[in-house]
Amino acid sequence: MSLVNIISAIGNNSSIYPLIVRDCGIEVPSKVLLTYRQNLKDSKQMAYNATRERLIDEYGTSLIWLGGIPAMNKICDWGINKIGYNPKINLNLLNENSKQGLKSNIDKFKNFAPNEVKELEKVLKNKSFYQKLLAGKFILSTAIPILIMGYLLPKFNFALTDKIRKKQESQKEEFMILQKAIIPKEQKDEISFKGVTSSLANMSTVHKMAVTDGGLTIGRVGTARNKYEKMEMGFKMSMMMFLNFIAPIWIAKGLDAFSNKCFKINVNLDPDLLNDKDFIKAIKEDKLELPKNDLFEYLDKKSDTKFSKLSEKYCGIKYLKNRIRDPREFVDEVRVMKFKEEIENFAKQARMSGDVEKYSRKALKVKSINILANVGISSFLLAAALPKLTFMLRKKVTGSDAEPGLIKT
Image 1: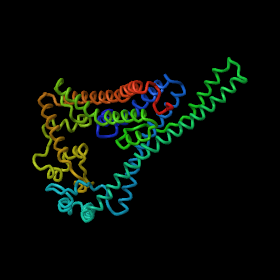
Image 2: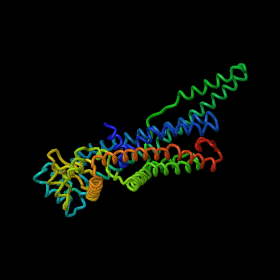
Image 3: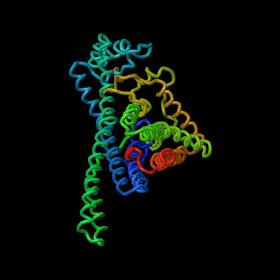
Image 4: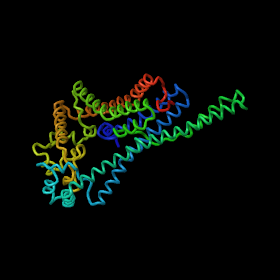
């Protein structure tokens, strides 16, 4: 994978790649370090307990989110296939219109994709049952990971902390008795340090944390140990959802608009496309063919054109191996036409610049900088600004620097 491919991936805010980069590469390590430093103001033992909880929470949640949802999807798809239906058939096709739908796609593709049409016909005869199957898939694929992340993992984490704290308190009592009885004064600091090292060796970490959704937030608030932890958890996780899902989109739009206004550079296209030599050559030679009237007719009759292949890559259009459009898939006409308009705008500005290749190289450079800046800004907000703000609110509300759930009430 080239550098441009990597930048393209982390610049796609509709995918999980920017989340993985922000969480795994920047946010989680920073939050763990900040948690340790903040709770160290209370005591070393509080810092160790808080850090262990944060490690298990962040990495455990990430492992379940990244692995649990795809695993449940595969299990559900296997079950739906066993029942005799293809889960790839898009539910939007049940809403029939003049351009696409179950009936119209069956009529249109019956001579070109007979196997896929048979699958559509089965769904057409049993629409209600198929809807229930996909609804069940959605529920299972989201509810089970949410249950584990939002309820079971916190319960396990809190129970582990209680167990370790009891052991720590017991060891502390034994140490005090032993200290008074036989330990000379000059040896006290060494034994205390060894006790701390022993507690660190028992820490268990899994994998990284990913973005939580509303169900996870409700679960975490519901399992919080006191009202202050509930308040902090609700604020922190709501802000994380905003900073992970909404803020990067706003930042991207702002940076791209700024670039367009200040540098007169159109950077609305993907870096991979800006680096596509065939695409740039077609613009330079004014040979890039785009749909004029009927989008569906164009995609079906001209499936081997550059635009059709780009729509397949960037707009979710699906083709079978024989380049027949997959009748089971829904075409987001608005998305494809917006993509077409962006290409037209870029091509117009590039040709007006007098040097299409130079313009595209500059656009690629600016777009790449914008993407990296977006990751940096959103990561800073998540990894530094949000934790600091949370700590300030905690101190103001509780009067303590320690994690609210670890304070005995």
